[in-house]
Amino acid sequence: MLNKLIIILLIFFNSYAAQSYIIEDKPAYFQISADTIGVPIYIDGALIGHTPIENPIPVLAGIHHITHQPPSIRDPFLQYGQTDGVKQIYVMSGDTVTVRLDTYLFSQRLLQMKKEYYYTNYIGIGISLLIIWQLWIVAN
Image (cartoon, rainbow, N blue to C red; front, side):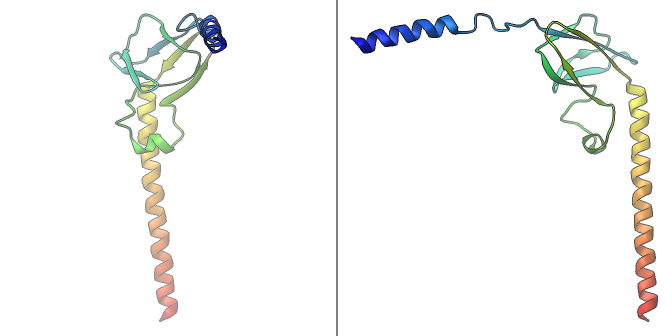
């Protein structure tokens, strides 16, 4: 009898202490704009829509990753380089954060990074060949 009373009390207090709403805090919002029309916008890897997005996008409070490129098709330069393509933004509940994505400037910076990468590789290969050539001369 005592066990049944304890179980009933636990069920009652559990439902009393439970969360009453799915989202107890007020949601946060992102107001997103871009320099180009028709750019797909991804928040945490999920497609939200294409620019221009008129209404603010509700999200939970916390850190979110906003980008205009899908996470499945990503350039390897974006994964390891410091670019502005993926914006990591912390938003508090009840706040509205305005995010501006400059897709044209981002694509130009990505092309510049690729050129720098290739030049660095060519210089490294050239120096390696010079060292091997010098060692071959010294060995003979």
